[in-house]
Image (tube, one colour):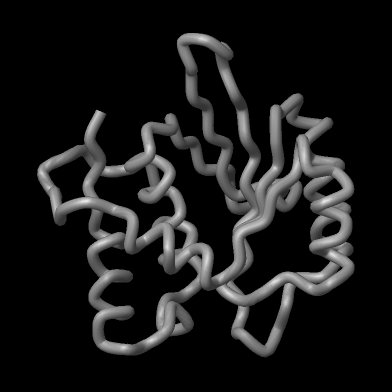
Length: 154
């Protein structure tokens, strides 16, 4: 299924101008991540804004050899001066079990603290982290500006 790439296209333009993703608001940043996931073949379901357990997106993908993977995503749109700390990672770790997910991923426009990175490494088989530079790389990996697809479900 093809999804529109409105926020991917917008993010590419922001980066092309030499600006940072800080110009996006938190909702736009979440939609950007959802579009990136959909573009990579994930079935994307946003969580409700209230009582979301810190989880913003649940994604599911089926691999012919490995079966289904369910990943819970916590998205933190922070300024570069405000890194994601270990408490957020602990919260995500609990959500992986609660949602019976294969993995939990923290995505931030900022960076991850040393403690956060250490906890992610400790649980590397069920936890992963993407910082602002990782997100920028993910954006650059995207192909053409195909905008003929379906809108995401939020």
